[in-house]
Every structure is written in structure tokens, then in C-alpha cells.
Image 1: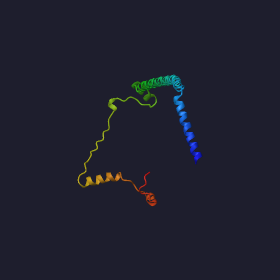
Image 2: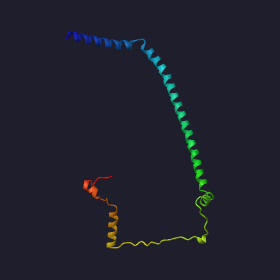
Image 3: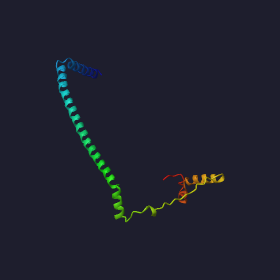
Amino acid sequence: MKISVQRYRATNKLRNSLKRQLVSSRYLLPALIVLTLVLLPCINIWQRVYVLNLVQEVSNLEKEHSKLNDLLKKAQADVVDFSRLSRVEKLAIEQLGLARVNSENMFTLRIDKAYLQPEGIDEVVHSLKKIADNLPVLTESRAETGAIFDEK
């Protein structure tokens, strides 16, 4: 036991002496100054490179944005061009074989469907039919398998 205690004390003294030597060393302060003088330019250079990469990425994205805006303007111009009346008439005549019709030959079909408001018992039956239309349907195959509440 004495030997292990002595060894522990010796290593503890060694550690303390290394710390003391390092802190009291005359080279510690100059080494920290040199380290700082080396690290600060490295950080500055890294920052500039990073910013330049970001600037390049932004310029590439701006170019892509302008290209997409140009494509959008071209597509809108094509839509306007394709929806011109003269072009539509030309396609209707040539490809579909349609012809212009005079207003005397035109007529409009109008279907007047009167909506009857159900009253009394008819209103209740009508409401129940609407509810029944939205109820889930149980088929025999699903009922046999016992999968009544399964959702698909």
C-alpha cells in the first residue's frame, strides 16, 4: 500500500509540476501570440473564400431566375398568340371543318327545371335520402370477412 500511495503522490507531483512549468514558462506567451497571429489570417482567408462562393452561387441563381422569367414571358406570348381569334377560326375551318353560322340560324336551348321545395313528410324523406347517399355501403364479401370497420 505504501508503494502505491508513493507512486500516486509522485504522479500527482509530476502533473502539478508540468502545469506549473507550462504556466510559468517564458515561451507560453510568445507561443500564444504566434498562434493568434497565424490563426487570424487563416480565419480571414476562409471567410473571404466562403463569401466569394456565396456570391457566385447567388449570381448563378439570379441567372437561372432571369432564364425562367424569359421562358415564362415566351409561354405567355405563345398563349396570347394561340388564343387569337384569327388563328382559332383558321384551325376550326381547316382541321375541324366548321363554318361560320349566321345569327338567324342560331338558337339557344333553355331547359327550365322548376325546383320544388319538399314539405312535411316529403321533406323528411328527402333529407333521409340525402343522408343515405353518404352512408358507407357494406357488401357481403366484407361482411363475411368481419372487416366492417376497415377503411380502404
